[in-house]
Length: 249
Image (cartoon, rainbow, N blue to C red; front, side, top):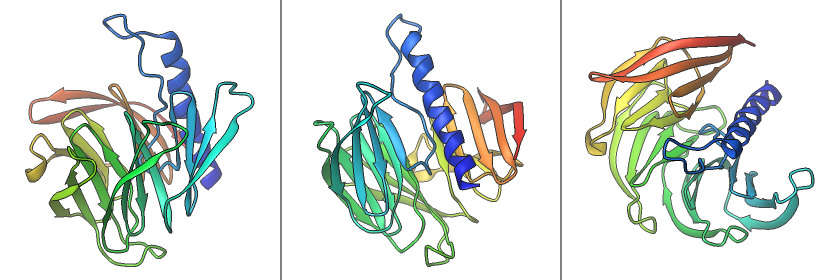
């Protein structure tokens, strides 16, 4: 199962990069060539570099020749590192005990900017310009019975501030679609986070999944039983979902 999941994440990231390299946006400017993965991913593509976390370290590979990646650096992060999310010039790293933010001003030498600590729990994270969104869930390997959505103000990336926390059932992967946060809980839930201090549940999909990948208006939900694609359309008071396809696993 883990190999299948890794393959799906890798295919999604490669598909995004290959389509970006030949397409341009509505204004004719090149589309961002970074890869797009889910919040449970352990690797991310940023420009000509691949970043991969293992249990302790952040590993940097240079991809000038994609057929011959070159290992260039290893950065010690901490213990029980789980997830990696890239946003602009930052890497958000989730561990069982907290969230780390690293700068990519020098892409071969990521620099730690800050760390926030929390109770021992499994910890995926996504972010935008102003806020980072973290789910904490109970698990045999992660310790506590805490199931929370936490929102941090990261306008000062050197000093993240927890501004909101709400109880959920068993939250895992998550993704952002504009002002909406999509969270894999006991179902796929949609929260309006236009006011991050007061997130509001606005609608949901009756589907169990453990992570999502969002690219433009496409949602890819990954669960124990398969992969499901939805078209996302903002609607009054939430998002409407149109199922496009499914692959049973």
